[in-house]
Image (cartoon, rainbow, N blue to C red):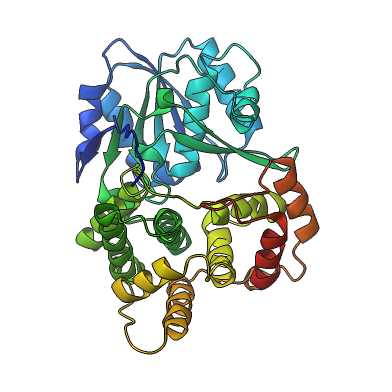
Length: 388
């Protein structure tokens, strides 16, 4: 393992009824900006529970944050927050709302143009001095954004999708109540499971470094998702399954799995461009890119693919190549079983705009991706062609 530092300051409030504990986490004299996405949090009672927990605190609400949150929308929230002099942000939603709220919390304290937060981060120059304190009520387990310091923001006007990280945007607390996920549509449930699964794979399926704890933590999360992911589709109100999926998604990307080990993230970077160009859900892009990536990078990832085949899929017989084939096929089969197609054509896109995607990868400096920089634009092109 490499040397590493691990920052995980988020206080997690897990279990049924935990929304009420917001009252213990936000000062009584706070001025709160409550952010959310669509109307589901109104319909399922989550927003009402949040309002009740906030009580007499000053609160202003901003809804309409999109999947793959758009910079133009988020800037409107920043303007509202400045007008109302808010000093706390409370995100009620899934990863997109949380990511967008991290951007809002940072932009409220940022002196320059808000988009600079993303462009400076992409150039390796971002230095945020502070951000407005952020809390989270998670409604869609998927991204792990509730306990990490990263966010992905889109700018639809220019077709860009960029990432920033800062310790200042770690949520101070995160409410994880599995019962609020009972009413999720199957597509969102499935996307969340796939997203969490690929988060783990990006930190695990690299090269061996004898990190036994991280490897087995990764394998435990993957096995949990394989077991309980399909279960929550057929039994949406199975509390134990929902709780296990929710915790698996949080653990997938809070820093523990990837501590001190090589990480890949090529699938995510290519997936971001697919979303920006074609509008596919984030998890849908991961489901189409990952199997193609594993197939094309199988020699480089050989040792870990064999370990993955053995420990996650129980494939111990036959030649090494047959076991790797079986592990990649099992991964594809799992995504398909969750109802998430693994070819771009499965989403009605007959001619993916590969040249445009490659141009964006180049624009964003994504020309040497992967754990050791081996995913060049030529490799990305081959992956996209195989995923079509």
